[in-house]
Amino acid sequence: MKFSAVSRFALAGFLSSAFIVAAQSPFQFPTANRALYETGGDPKFLASTSPDRSWTTGSFGCVRTDGWQMHEGLDIRSLQHDRRGEPTDPVLATADGTVMYATGKAGLSNYGKYIVIRHLIDGIEIYSLYGHLSEIAPGITAGKAVHAGETIATMGRTGQSIAKDRAHVHYELNVFVNDNFSAWFRKNMPGERNDHGIWNGQNLDGLDPRDILLAEHDPAKPFNLATFIRSQTELCRVVVRATNFSYLKRYAPLVLKNPKAEKEGVAGYEIALNYNGVAFALMPRAASEIKGAGKISLLSVNETEQKAHPCRRLVIQKGSRWQLTEKGLREVEMLIY
Image (cartoon, rainbow, N blue to C red; front, side, top):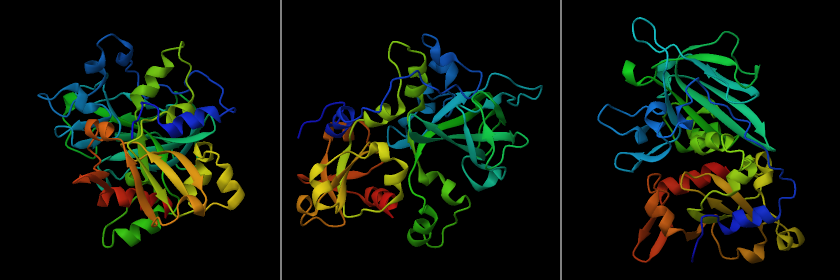
């Protein structure tokens, strides 16, 4: 099966999306560092994992451990420091939204002290995350409404061993996977701690913030979040015999039309996933269309995309056949739980 950069599902989404109106990106940089806009400015914008590593290790994607470790955000360098060399940059809300979670318990996560904010952009919920903070601003607690550019914290080095000269804020833009994550975690991770409930990083699947921030700087290419998500490159496609999971309601704009399923009744969904596991297109299917399929079945794999971005290890080839790995099954099971 051949694939293009825009999957068949994404194309179907474009054709059925009369509600989409192009607009300039509403997202702002989460610090005063704007070096991403400069020609060759990436090394001044992104912090590498160590002095002998490329700035690319601070970017999004399969950028660590020779391409086999996923980094789900951007590590944005500090610009301001006190006399001890500690970062003092204000961390800013990337868009209007509502604080969903803020924790000052640095030792309970690799994020250190971190904040999650919910935004509603172009009919899509997206969640920004800001990690390694030294301090959270007064009043930044769950339920607080914030505005784009508002100071929410101070950059720091909490949660990991981060040298002063490589201090940064870890910045993510995510889809939220499942309202029932805590129950799923208790069932599937017995004995393991979940100190952050539904705001555990496993329940947030990242999109590339760099692409989104750069879109704001290019008025010739108007940005729409729904279109951006729908245009993700497909890693694989699965079919699930599940019809009542929270993602369907939260991301209704990503659910496509299928007259056959509307007529006969929905028995499951065909779901396109990108290489980070983001479900970016969901097609309802009638029972006659998925006859014989198990609860979760792998339909197809984009081998070119898997070779280019293998780090999440969602699928594996055994002989001439592809199958979901344990990680891949877990990702889909978490989505539909």
